[in-house]
Length: 593
Image 1 (cartoon, rainbow, N blue to C red):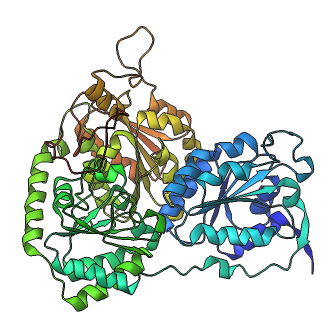
Image 2: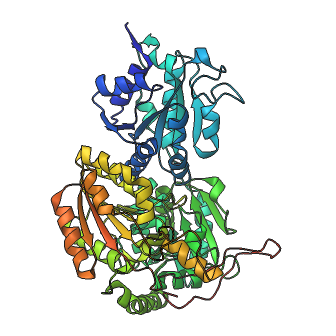
Image 3: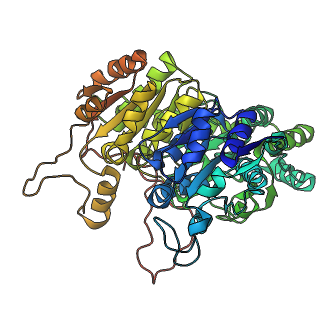
């Protein structure tokens, strides 16, 4: 029996577990971990320029893989670890599995207020900082128990509802020698998910037997469960149309006749019509956010619509709407059980309902044709997203596409048909610029395959320093930056509500005209290629060229600021504390209002 350091033991176990990549940044608190990963293992080590980038690359990696082996992140002490707070919160609320190994100071100095110690309330309590925004947060306290803690932390991150687990490891513990006789890590890579209660399935089928206008509403739980085939089988067995939320986008092939496009604030006309007029909703792997439901104004639950809710997280069942049937279940297992029972019960397509939805689809496509083919300059977001989908479908249909928050949240869900399952966005925290970094992780997870990030100029400026990482790794990333020199979605709504904007537009002091940096020049200065697009017919060739190059490329697109944008549902934020609020349906507005 020999001895190795704790850091070497963790690296050895992760290698045995098939770990493909560790994302991190050097700091004096994680030197032992970095040394072990880089020099004592064959795990790919990716150095980033900011700790939050490391988490976001891991986020994008998970969204492409959705299973163990986990992406690993390592960061270091004080402000370095604090830089991970926003992206870890995003990962937590969006069910992204990863393990963060955070270096902290030596135990010998705990509670002395040493450099970058979180000490005033308790000795080195970095783990305490993270507990509200991580699936689990813990700190190693002994070298002889750290490996057991590490393995349990790993299992927690990918089992059940996945999420980020933070494990703080003091510097002295990382470097302490332990036995090299390590436990078998394979049991910690396996988890068996809960299945649906047979009585709940039976009750759900009884409701579906009487439904005239049934709907399947699906979210990101489909992706994390790998439930794509199970969803498609249920749809084709029963003829129930599917209404994905924005985080459920591409859960079913978007050219399937029973795919109604995304629902919600920026949903399709036929999607929102179906959601608004359904009589039974089967919701799987979704918790009905305000984005998904237009501020809870879309569904008429429970008055005229009954809800069957299936989710792996019991706490999400019935959170937004009361249920007729609620079941704690993995999405795939729940869908499979429901398919068997529905087939036995003889549930078939309600053709009057699906024919009506088809007519609504044609109406919506006709109404939005002008936006999708708009030739205005500066460009319309709808034209950019529509053309992006067309180029990807033709050149690289399996590419990862990540679209950001802001105005893209009004167009990515409904105006960018997915050619694969790999279209995603940060669907809860909506961290600006998330896509700029997460696209790199998705590329790495697909063997350095092509990945496209669509984001606004404000979002890109917050995350621009990820470009050198893509250049160093020579990843085929394309950043499409919508340049209108304003926070457009905030601007539009502020003007609608207040009649004026505040701190949305970028301009130099004393000047009326809008101003912004030259993002193409920035990208070139950081080693990437750059293309400027000012006319609608320039965009598709620019994207084709960028993808074909196989090199990091930024495309700046001059986009329109004054033209009314697409919003399927306008809903007011409650603005008066003394007024009563309750969820309920509202009339659908005119398209593009």
